[in-house]
Amino acid sequence: MARSGPEVADIFRRYGAAYRESHGASLCTAQRRVMSAIELCRTAALGGHIERCDRCDYRRVCYNSCRDRHCPKCQSLARAQWLEDRRSELLDTQYFHVVFTLPQPIAAIALQNKEIVYNILFRTAGETLRTIAADPKHLGAQIGFFAVLHTWGQALFHHPHLHCVVPGGGISMDGTRWISCRRTFFLPVLVLARLFRRLFLDYLRKAFDAGDLQFFSSLESLRMRDAFLRHIAPTQKKDWVVYAKRPFAGPEQVLKYVARYTHRIAISNNRLLDIDDGKVQFRWKDYRDDNRHKTMTLSADEFIRRFLLHVLPDGFQRIRYFGFLANRYRTEKLALCRQLMQMPPPTPTREIGKDYRDRYEALTGISLKTCPLCRRGTMVVIETFECAANRWTRHDRQRLLAIMSRPTLRELANGTISPREASRRISKAISVALCSRSASPCVIASAQVSCPRHPRPSLRPLATPRRVAMPIAVALECPAV
Figure (cartoon, rainbow, N blue to C red):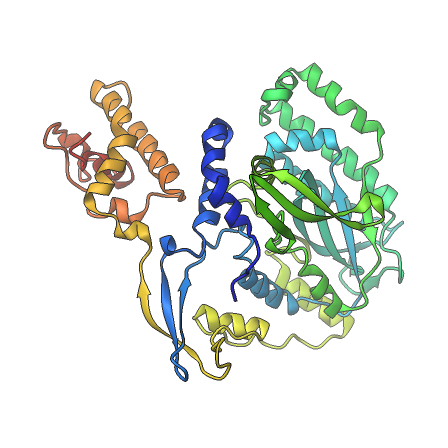
């Protein structure tokens, strides 16, 4: 059922264009794509299908979703599938929840170097837990766990931290027995915090020395090594926050708890209260004031800015596995854990239908096929329709490509850039314009002709590699270039 209250998509649809116009220079490709994906999610622009009840003839139109991981409406199926996959990996032991948080001076660096610093966060948290757990003074075992990256607080400020869910024990170093930790105590948080701080700052300095970090705007002065070292010096003396929460009651409680953290976005639609007159009102929990629920009002411009702070780089893995849960050794290590703990093997995963509605029902027990009107019939797909992009006319494609490609083709004709560079620029322009990771098939299909006004046989697809020639041929298809 569709929500009747305000949604994040409504904010982007009303105020997204104005935000792009005023902040376009500071928006990266990933942020533009997320904005467009959320705006178009479950609208006619992405296509969809028409369903009819086989009992009462009730009809409804269902639009396709964007499936972007930052969209608040597209996480249910992915979350359910992930939890089902993790169910077979649960061990009959207590679980602990450990949180690693970056101090504010480091978080400011992370905001301008997301991929580098977030990777360091994962690496150092993993090394910290495994190193301390392997120490005979503490546990003396090989542990396994998974970590989920969150970059936000309740007020949508940038607050990078890592949630780690760790079984309360591990495999002995010789692999012959399972070693359990104490009932209510996993590892000393003060020891974890100090090792985490030292490892993180070491890796951060190495990244700076290797030239991997970039600084601009208010942090531009940190390009100098002395200024960079002065900036991080205070963090070497402060205690970093590593928090170990109370253990879970059992494996099933782990799944219920973890569902709150995996595939979560900066703010859900349920927290939005009102959108009116350029203002956005939402609920938030103030942890510094005894966890009281409060209401915050932001301008639409500020709300969008804070939301986009949490857009992750393309291809970045925000859920990672370590120790005996690492992908490479997971099957054999988990089998060894069950053997040492005398656990029965997991039940085979049940077959799930290909249709997304069948998969969702199998994973969650909630049927998307039941008629919402009579509650007895089954909704059957009777018609599908394509997305708006696939219905573009040839004139629309020519007009778009002419605007995007004219400057690049001029440089190519003058010999100032190579065909490969021209191809790269045009491909990037098409990708940005269509808010997709690659050129849309509706644009590049059958575009293998050269421009009659500017014949360049060397640029035909057969004369150069396809990945180089095709984007150029697409642009040359347009006679308006």
